[in-house]
Image (cartoon, rainbow, N blue to C red; front, top):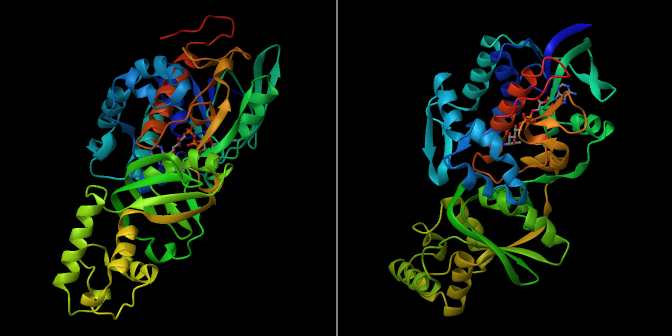
Length: 423
Ligand SMILES: Cc1cc2nc3c(=O)[nH]c(=O)nc-3n(C[C@H](O)[C@H](O)[C@H](O)COP(=O)(O)OP(=O)(O)OC[C@H]3O[C@@H](n4cnc5c(N)ncnc54)[C@H](O)[C@@H]3O)c2cc1C
């Protein structure tokens, strides 16, 4: 039996923060991770660049992005908020920069630098890291975790932090194990659901245009012809549909809308220009190319690969001379630019969801310390708790803040009878 002050289960961002900061408090800490290395999921965040946090550094405004549960995050954010995260990564040799929409990324590097910086942090703090170590079960007795059974033997500790993540991208190790143990010892579970997921379309051509970004576009969500949401920003087609920040942020509404009726997305490729003005622009383009084939007239308006799809969908003979394009045909073209109809078939599930919504109920966690209200030496951190934010770095910030708070408090509890330190 291996004995520690604190055991952290799960070596993602939340678990690595919990372990490192618990060790910095002087606790003997073991971090148990079933993958061959910690932070596997970090490597794929932000398309390999890792959107570490968001520039909104006022905790009260930050938590508004988490909906009705957001306020629960306040103590953690005051303890270790955006400013502390930026300072932390700079100290670890990963300077950050602010990008469009308040997204904060590593200045020079990529997600791999973030993962390596966290490994170094954990190691330098003196944490004993066991990778390739799958936790199989938690044994409870008299309201405390007594033992942690793993594939490499049994561990025991005064405090245990669960940071096993959710169910999204299961190939990164997230198989919901923590939910099972939390439920088994009396915690209420809000049904985990995939969130921030790409959308599948029945339009078969998306794979032809899946390699470039649609920047500064507007997407409107319609159910049975009624507009119910709209977003402005970045999106991209995928092999089977559409993804990117504005689609991901709307995806839970899209999933609900699919239960109500026929769902379409209207893509406005030129949202800064009103339809009548853009029609004049089209007239100018067609006039300038009047003796050329229609297929060769759209170069100023669209990326090259998109032109082929446009020409096919608009139903104008590509060889028709521009001067012969009729008004009705031009109106069809205008509609494609301003109200391109995309037919929603469904939402991707956990396999491609960025995060999992739901999880361990906040009712069962003292959010001032991240300690369980059911099991007195158990703490929670990260995605496995019932908090989920939009894209933009909000979800990782939740992991840093709750990981820090859980780690510090777990370390403060080296004997199960003493009181918790709240910050
Ligand atoms: C494609 C993608 C891109 C993303 N991009 C961003 C972004 O740019 N910015 C952002 O803010 N968020 C992003 N996210 C979300 C972010 O990655 C998650 O919110 C975050 O990783 C959750 O951290 P966590 O520590 O709670 O859990 P995880 O990162 O899921 O880590 C949990 C760890 O626990 C381990 N584990 C599970 N069960 C066991 C067990 N039984 N025994 C031992 N170990 C176990 C797992 O192997 C895993 O390593 C992205 C997610 C995805 C999938």
